[in-house]
Length: 97
Image (cartoon, rainbow, N blue to C red; front, side):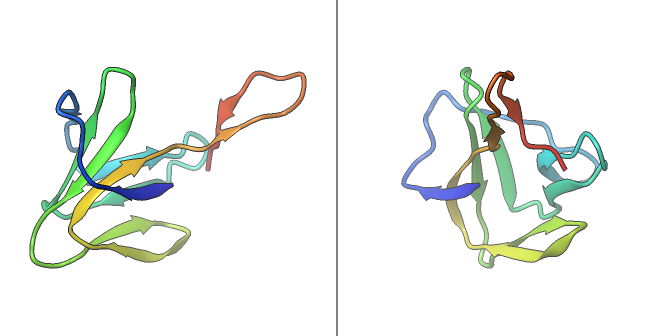
């Protein structure tokens, strides 16, 4: 989930880009990824593992995934949340591709 925020906390540190660009989430099962190849996107993470995305530039960037059409993100600051799946009697786990 990607939600617009007013600002990114000052303690958020940049996350290194991969050869595919900024990877917001990578599927452990399929190898698919939600990624932004544009250099106008920067992923950041706090010590508590809260992720933020900063999009700069004059135009929106494309969020890509192998299983759906590109999603355009306009310039701004965003919080990135990886959904967690809960089942009674089991430990919570992150949703996987």
